[in-house]
Every structure is written in C-alpha cells, then in structure tokens.
Image (cartoon, rainbow, N blue to C red):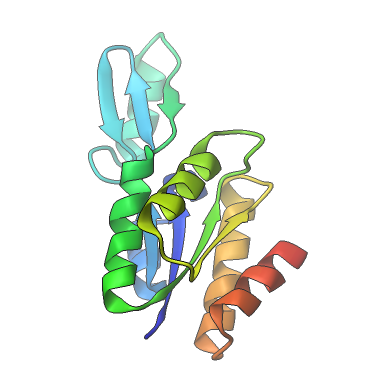
Length: 150
C-alpha cells in the first residue's frame, strides 16, 4: 500500500520531473481553433508556444472529465494505494469538481482532494511539498492536511 500524488496538467510539470518524483498527471484539453490536444500527451510545451505565435486565435482549455480522474482512482483502488490529488483552483476551473465526482463514483475513501487555490507554479510548489512529505513517511491524510494548511 502506497501513496499516489496526483495533479492536473495545469501544474506544467515537465514529464521527466513528474516521472522522477512519481507524480501522476491528469491532462487538460487544449483547443486551438478546431484542433484539440491533450496537454502533455498530444501537445508539448514547445508545440503549444509555437502555435501560440503562429495562430491568430487564442487557445482555450477544458477541464478533465470525471472519467479521466476515475481511471487513476480505480488503479489506486485496485492497488490499495491512497491518493492525494492537488488540483487547479476551484475558482479557476471545474477540474476540482470533476475529481470530486470521480471520487464518489469510485467509492474509495482514501482519496484526498486538495484545492490548491492557485495555478501552475503554485501547484508545483504544493505537489513537490506533498512528495517530500510522502517520501518522509507521512500518511496521506496528514499530507493532504499539511498541503491545505500552507
């Protein structure tokens, strides 16, 4: 039984850093005109910025669906792992709400969902802190409480 740290792609983690820290990432959808991409999966940061320079229209994003979180939660449930999910501010996106719906659908109690109340670099700081606490042996409920406190 372990602890999985989860965030969404708005945290802008480099994939290699996330893998090294054992951070799981739920991708957000990014739209440029009629084209849709999954952040970190079908579009890289470099391609995103290239499109931003080339295209006249501004990109938009959409929150992950509950099913996107449910897949991660079901995997954790099967492994009997706890989950600490630190997500984009609920005031900026419905991402947090999607995770809460997925938790209810999963029916697995040791999933702790934290509203970061921030975005990008702020989320990274909180996620890195959660990883440090996890790696020091703190249990998931205490990690979530410590992250919420700061």
